[in-house]
Image 1 (spheres, one colour):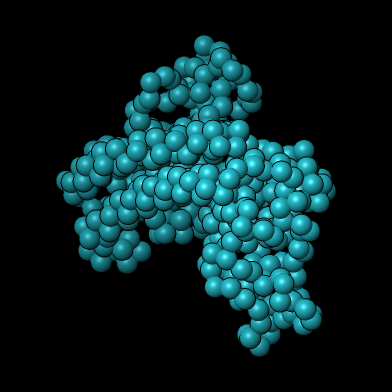
Image 2 (cartoon, rainbow, N blue to C red):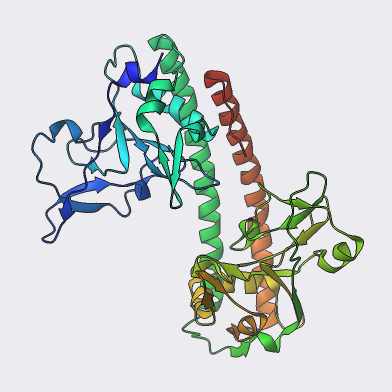
Length: 399
C-alpha cells in the first residue's frame, strides 16, 4: 500500500525563536537522529514557539520522524527515527517531517517504521534527493506518494516487529559489551599509570621524536580498482583499531607495493582531517589475510621497542590527554586540519618502565580476545538483521 494512504499528509515541523529565559519547548532536530533509528536526547534544544493549534504536532509514542534535509554524498537523506518517549512534550524542527499512522487497527507504526528504515538503508531515498550548496533535500511529498509498504495482516506485522526488535536488542547488547570492554581498558590504564596530564607518579617525559626511529607518508595516487590491493584511508583508521568493513583497492606497481606495504606493529597516525579532533588518531597495524598498504592521509612511524610499547602508546595517544596534545600541534588551511611528522615528534608523553607497559599490553591482549568473540557474535546478529530485512521488505543493506 502507498505510504501516503497509511499516514495521510506529512506534518511539517516548527523552529520558533531563541529560548532566552529557558522555559521553551524541546525541539528535536536532525542532529538528534542516529543511523540506527533511535533518537539521541543528549543535545535537545528548547525554542520559543508561539503558534496556536500545535497540539497535533506534539510527538506521540509510535510517531515516525523523517529527515527532510541532511545526508551527504555517502549517506542518503531520509533517515527515520521512531519516537517512544513522553507524549505532548517534544516538537520537531522544520528540517524534519512527522509521519503518523492513521489507522493503527490496520497498521502497526513500528512495522511501517521498519519498512522505511530498510528502504533508507538500501539507498531507496536517493531518487528523491535535491542537492543545493552541499545539502541534500528530500522531496518528501513525492517520496511518501511513491513508497510502498508491504501489506500484511496485523498478526503478521506484529510477528515481524517482535522478531526484528529481538535481533536489534541483541545487536545493541553486543555493542554495549564492546563499549564496556573498551572502558575496562581505559580504567586499567588509569589504575596502573594515573591520569596522563597529571603524571602523578612523576614518570620521565619524552617527546615522541626521541623514540621515533623513522616515518613516512603513504601513497599519494588515488584510484578504485576491483582487483587491486587494499589501501587504507582515513575512514578505516579509527581510535586504536582499523576498521575493514569498507575498504578501497588500487592496483599498485611493484615499487609502490614495496614502499607502502604495512608490516606487523607499524604505528599509523591520521595526518589530515576536516575535524581537528580526529587528526592524530592512531592504531597499531596487525596483519590480516592479504597485504595491506596505506595512502598519504596516513603517516607510518616506527618506535624504539626497547623504550616504549605500541599498545601502551596507542591507548595513551587516543585518550583525552593525547587529543589535547595533538590539538596543540595541528595546523589548518582551507578547512583542512593537518599534522606533520615534526608535529607528531613534538608530542610529549609520560613514559613508565617498559615492564609495566608490557604488563598493560598483556592485559589488553586478553581483553581483545573477548572483544573478538563478541565482535563475531555482533557481526552474525547484524547479518541476521539484514537478512530478515531483505526477507520482510525485499531490500538489503548496501555496504
